[in-house]
Amino acid sequence: MDGADEPATLPEYRDNPFISALPPILSTVEALERLTDLPRFDESERRYPAHLRAHCVQRLGRYFDPLDRHLLLESRFSMLVRQGYLGRNPATGDYVRRLQNSHERHPATVEKALRRLPAYAAAGADVLYAPGLRTPDVSKAAVDAVDPKPLNLLVSSPVGLSVEQIATLGVRRISLQPRRLGRLPADGPHAGRPRALRRPRRGRTVRCAQ
Image (cartoon, rainbow, N blue to C red; front, side, top):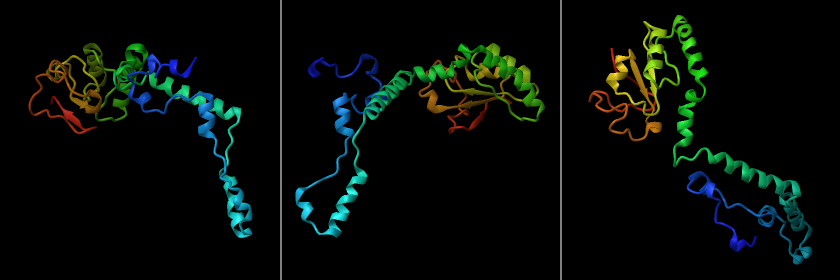
């Protein structure tokens, strides 16, 4: 394929800020040119005195002439980085949503967490939490599992419940992760929240019910 006919970028690589920030995909010839680092040489330097020629010889320490294995590595790393960014596109939020909804793909994770909560409570933990508590039924089960210890609900994405509804389940505290939440929709989990419940600093726990 002639270079003029090649697409500027592959369709799956478009609209991805991470991939857009990378250098262009290199052909073998382009990679060879960029990796090659030949020492500077001037025929007239052969007439330099010995103490200067000794310094010129040190240029050989920076000499690099790529082998086939180097060109293969460049190509593989180029593919590896770009393919890795396909599922980590911050413009769509798909990657964060998949992380946050991992419990939906792996229900055993939530079940295992619910089994461990009583053990943590018995060990003396003052406040307990578990990842993946996104439904009222699961949150209520966690509250019952640690009773009478308070349960902390970690909210990293909209869960479709108001603060009052979460408190009704028996949740005693809510921890927010604002950077993941971004802008909270008017009908999200914080719709109609009390004015006293302000946006916390990162990692700070907010008491929502006594």
